[in-house]
Length: 316
Ligand code: SD4
Image 1 (cartoon, rainbow, N blue to C red):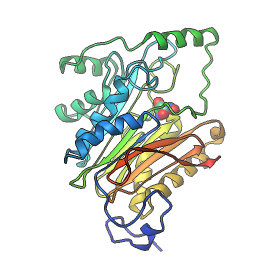
Image 2: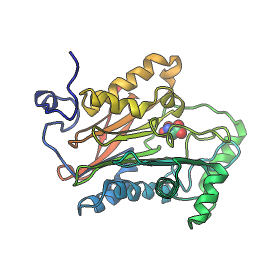
Image 3: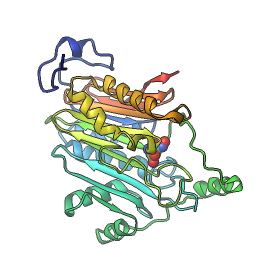
Image 4: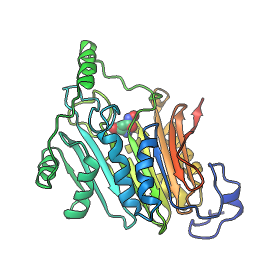
């Protein structure tokens, strides 16, 4: 039997859903974001959302916090560099009208999410990369900054001693930030920003700036974002698939689980990798799921005062 479309009324399904707080009542506004650094990001987003601000403004303001924080070593300023010692950033943003903007392989800009928004709003394009993205950012008034902090430089110099590129399961709670928000009007937007996999090849771009992979929003259904090994996420168009599964009637939690399991079943080496998804639907229901234990996310709503939740996983 086909699952109900998400715009139809679903009572018992929602009420018995596994995800945190799933029920049929619309709960808005709400903002969720990945990892521990999601707490500070959520707080900034909530300031706008609680006063009726738009989800789009909220997700941009939210993810700018870890981007600007040199202590957050996997996003924006102070992010881990690539194997040539260069910090290159990926980010994208998507709104309730399916407008989207993205930058990839961008250097020297602290807040790539705001450049992505400018790409969305001020150009006929969706994505700018590398030199072109930097040139655009500078034209738009963004300042050039050396993103390689002393701490990142020191770690890089240590890494150079072995120069081993080996993606590891990320259980350290300091990764890409993906954020999804549902505003008072009932609109959903999302943002995703990262310095990417540490010590990646120069020029490597992950899932985070790719609409449909690192982030996807369909305002009829909900939104999803991803963290973990970008190559695995791109191969299944991860976030777009999570949203499609929600469209078929799955809760956010169920949808994240289905796509994580799809990745696990398709990719042979996945036991050594981490992938996690976070999703939010039109009613303010949310959920997260990962291959391995250790993925957490932050939630802020009228009912939940900015709390961290451990996502469930295939392996504990
Ligand atoms: C990437 N998904 O560049 C991002 C970064 C990440 O664990 O989340 N790494 O692949």
